[in-house]
Amino acid sequence: MGTALAFPFEMDTVVALSGVRLVATHYGLHNSIAGVGIALGNLSVGALVGATVV
Image (cartoon, rainbow, N blue to C red; front, side, top):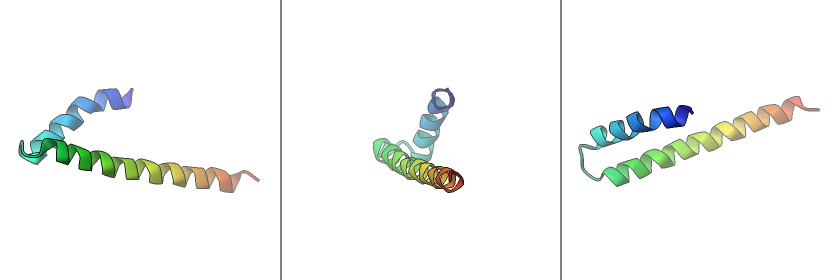
């Protein structure tokens, strides 16, 4: 639900910050950075859950 609400604003922000030049490249970079952040978050939470389960 949060992603569906944030997506229009996210896309508009990427377009505005790219200066309407190489929009797809900027959007791909944004998705790559977001993907790394998501992966690191999942690994961190998994490590914490794994450490608490004995």
